[in-house]
Length: 132
Length: 206
Image (cartoon, rainbow over all chains, first blue to last red):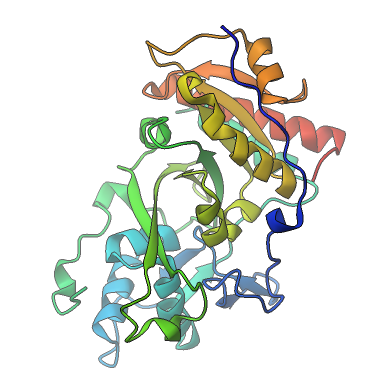
C-alpha cells in the first residue's frame, strides 16, 4: 500500500497571511504590547511570564485583577493565567495591560526564535530534556 | 465568569509553582489533526497536568467592541492544550498542542512566529490531514520534525516512503513514536532540538 501523496501548495495570494501591524483585521488579539528587556515594545506572548510586584492586591483592584495577582505571586505564563481564570487570551491582554500600567505586575519577555538560533539556549534545553 | 469568589479560583498546586528565579520561557508547538495524540504527547512530558487556553473571535474578525450587543455574529472558539517543562531554575519550556486548521492559524498567528520549532504529529491512517499544516510551517519558516504516532491498527510505511509521500527534504527528521510514553515523546523533542541545533550550526533557514 502506498501512502497518499502530498502536493506542495502554490503560494497563491489568498494563502498569503496578513502581516502584523499593517492595519488589516488579521490579528485582532495582538494589540497589546509590553516593554521588552531593552525597553523596546514587545507583544504580550502566551509564554510571557507574569509576576506580581506585591503579594496583597490593593483595595482598588477589581475582582479580576485581585484574582490574577493572587495567581501570579510566583511567576506564571499568560497561558496558565488564561487557563486558571478561564479567560480568552485577548481578554488577558486587556487585564494585564491595566496591571502593567499600574505597576502591579512585572512581565518577563519570552525567548522567541531568531533568524540565528541561540545554540547555548538549545543546548540548555537538550540538557534539561535529558533529565526528564 | 463570576469573580466575586476569586479567593476560590484554583491556581497552580504548590508543587506546580515556578521558582521566582524563572526568568524567561520558550515554546514549542505540537501540531496535527484532531485525535492524532497532541494532548497525549503534551501530557506525557509535561510536569503539570495539561491546561487549556482558548481564544474567541467573531466571524467578522474585527475589533472587540463590535461584539457587544450583536448576538447574530457567530463566535469562533479555538482551544489549545499545553504543558510545561522546567529546564533550569531560570528557563521554562512550554509545549502547545495545536490543531492545524486555517482558522486556527489565523487566530494564533503569533504562537507560531515565536516558537523555537514544531513537531508535526501524524497518524498514517489520515496522513493527508497533516499536508496543509506542513505547507504553512514551510511558508513561515518554522523549522519542524515529523513524528509518526504509531497506532496499533495504523498502516506502517518505511520512513523513506513517508518522506517521499510528504515531499520532505532529506534533512528533515522523521521518526516513529508512542505519544503515550514519556521517553518516546522526550526523544521526539530531543530530535527537534538537535535539528534546530544543526540549523544553527549551518546557518541555513531562518
